[in-house]
Image (cartoon, rainbow, N blue to C red; front, top):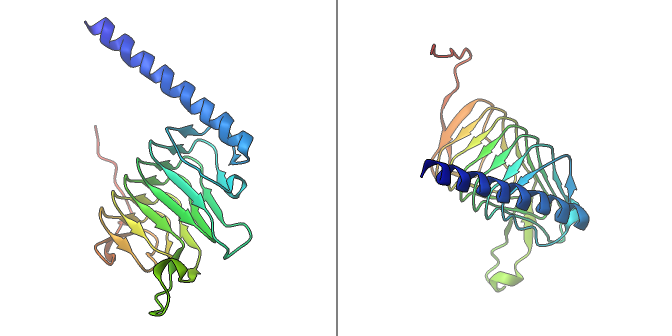
Length: 197
C-alpha cells in the first residue's frame, strides 16, 4: 500500500512539474518576462503579457490572476521579485504599477491593486474614471490570507500584515499590522534569537 501511495505522489509531482514547465513556455512565448524558471499552477494572465515581469524562482499557485489593463499609463506593470510565493486565488490588478519584492509570502485569497473608481453621483459605476497610484511591497514581506492592499500603499521590508486586513496606508519596515483599516500593533525586535533544537 505504501509503495502504491508513494508512486501516486511521485506521479502527481511529475505531472505538476510538466504543467509548470508548459506554462513557462506558453507565457514566455506570449511575451511575459520570465527570468529563469517560475513555478506556476493554473495561473491566469489574460492580456498585456509583455507588461508582466517575474523574477527567478518565484512561485504562483493555483488560481493566481495577474491583470495589467486600463489607460492610466501606456504600459501598466506588474513586477514580482525573486523567490516570492503567491498562494492560491490571489488577484493582482494593475493599471499603473504594482511591485512585489523578493522573498515575500503572499497568503491565499488576497487582492492587490493600484487603482480605484471615482464616485461621481451623476455617472454609473462602470463609467467612473479610474484613479491610480503605484503600490509597492518591499522584500521579505509576509501577507496573511484574504488581505486587501489598496492603491498607493508602500509596505516596507520585513513587514507582516495579518489575515483579513485591509491596507489603506503605508506600513513601515519591520512593522506588524492588522485590522480594517490595517494599523501597526508592534515591530519586530531588532535582535532575533534562533531557538535551539
